[in-house]
Image 1 (cartoon, helix red, strand yellow):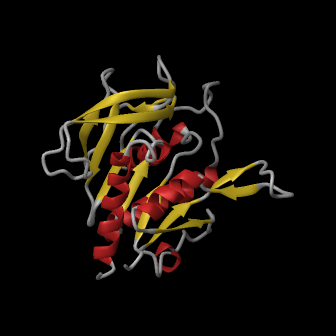
Image 2: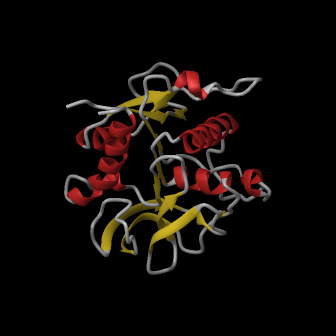
Length: 234
């Protein structure tokens, strides 16, 4: 069966045991989840371009985009200051790549799945804000998400789903164009549909963490892959 290529912006790392220098990485579990869902994941190098990033050129041959987790979005992107001591791993190059990639995908109907930081990027891009540091962090945290997804946009086909979380930030003011499909018991926005020329959805938790013990976690990846396959004409 045709495997659509899914572009995943890589994350910079200061060290990796197999490398002599700083690295560019994607989480292996995330790549495996896309592969098991039928896609072919490819890590992209973030870039800065004085005249803007030519995503039409860079995404030639790709059929979908996955915005993964990572460090914090710089708060100046959503109208706040960046002096909070809890902020970590902010990177203007990664922000610029992620924001412009998301904008291109949404405007041009490239199927998009946004996970954790990816959801934060899309919410900030569309005019929403983030909680810089939650009162109670959801790091190494598992809970149940209540779903209200009438069209089964995310593919779970259920009223609840388990969630494995690792984040200290969350959606605060929801952007126009984003519809909440799932929340945690404490009100944290966990699952959304995103207005787009193509299929687009977002999750606050990390479904890649537990797909081996909870096959439902592969379903949003399958939704992304199916939309990418359809966009490619297969």
